[in-house]
Length: 384
View (tube, rainbow, N blue to C red):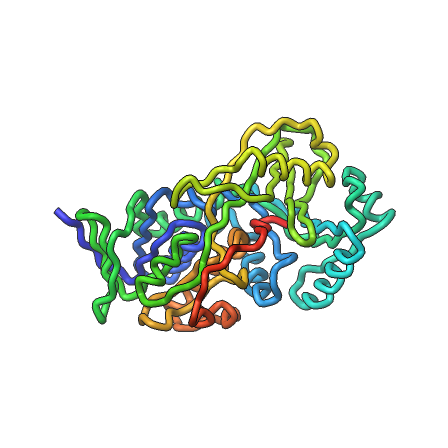
């Protein structure tokens, strides 16, 4: 017998965006059913590098990122755990004078967003970070950025929403979706039918097919960043490290393991990805240039995942242009972990109020009127 449910809002996708939207909607008193085909936080929201950074984002994202910064600061009261969130600081490395000039220009353009970026070079850089390799000639330091454990944080948002009464359905693939003129109708096999006035498309790298189902084709492609973790080492690095222009990113967990990332893996199929031996070797070579202490470190685990990229590396956040009640939140180009909780709140405000105080005009799906698939640029991940 098919179970039939009616709810104010249906959400497809249980990553950090969908789960935080479910939590915010329940705090507003709206009923929510979230449908996740796997387990909440098991895809890119749970397997990313764990960077919680504002530095280096496009200026159009900084208001959203600053809103998220406030949410991360009250994580325990919001989701019940600290998620190993540490405001360690984020150092973006320059390897050339051109890199230094780019970092300085970004500092000037981003003034007013509360990041308090500090430029470092020469003796000052060496004195503060003697563990850096010779390739590093300077950098930009954001003292209140940091990192967290995505395997803990993303599922915790879903659990917090469930505690407030959200109906969280895991291992529940949406096989059919339509709008009947008044409501959305979602079906999962022959066992579940969900009807709702609003539908949030938070399906990550697979959200493009949902948008296309409602007549909005976007040129999103998949990318597969490579990450690895070392054996526990003596603690030497107390911040999150990135590189101007991309390439690698690194941080050291309190227990001593170093998490590093960069390069590209490959897809096994539509749902799974793996790092190649060559990709891991490239990440290690680039990392050792900046972190000589890792030269003889043993890698104990490596992994990849699937992330959605749009040509301009900007997400789609906001109302559908074709279907009343459809609201998108996807395409974060490997950098959705930090801003995810703010996007969730914004999506909830769009449902409740029809508007949000956070600027999102730049993320409208309307900018893709005539899409053409493209290859993604080198991902930075939720990292540098």
